Image (cartoon, rainbow, N blue to C red; front, side, top):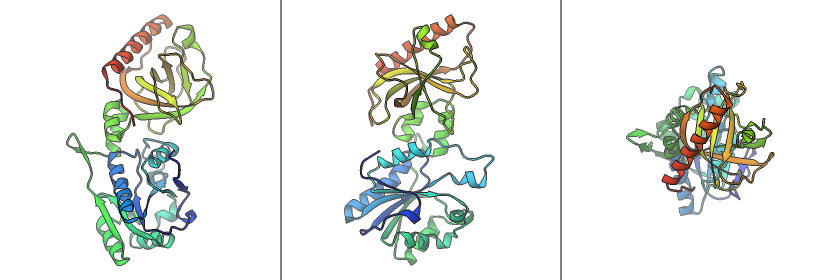
Length: 320
């Protein structure tokens, strides 16, 4: 997380601001390129007038409240989203709990509600399709009217396009569950990643010549089960070790109840049980399948390693 970013647990817990506040507002699941355009506009305006830029976001997703049996699945968990938001050069992030009390605020009162906690609020930045307030009654037009009455400004940004279609979290989710990692990375603006601690495994990989790191990771939205070319690094550093990962239920070995993330690092592996790692998913190589023997599995892992190494040798290095 970037140094100097203040994180506030709800509007009621923020510190007073003494300079004009430029506030980007949204759910920002994924923190994709469209989200960053909204946030970057707030940052640029704050730099121009000597103000400060911040983010107002919400957790959990409103669907958790209104559709608890069928909620929207999140691209990243709260910690990963916070990490990405902190890279956007804002001064503060407000993580507002989305509960029944907050959801009951009438759209007509939303701006006044913000001013109650942020008296220095000057401009709000949102996407063109943003909705808010009780029953999602509020839209950008209503926000502009409310802001004008309060002597505030609103900047609404059009949705960015990629390959002729809008960039959206819904679109990213579709690519993710199909294992289309290049498309996911293009829309996010950075590689999709998993973060977690190395945990003890069954050590089967060592016995067949492919030692693996088992990563404690349970995503809300599961990527396609299968084998991926990945980059690995410490949670606070840059993933600079290349490898191949299997995300699945290990049908040949034990048939796990929930998918497990296992990573084989090509070079000498410097990581051990307890280390916090970040795994970037670069390319989907194949679907998970059940083999008739451990020997057949070993041969396929060798081919997977070769395919991942070929991918990295042919792909330009990318960095954040």
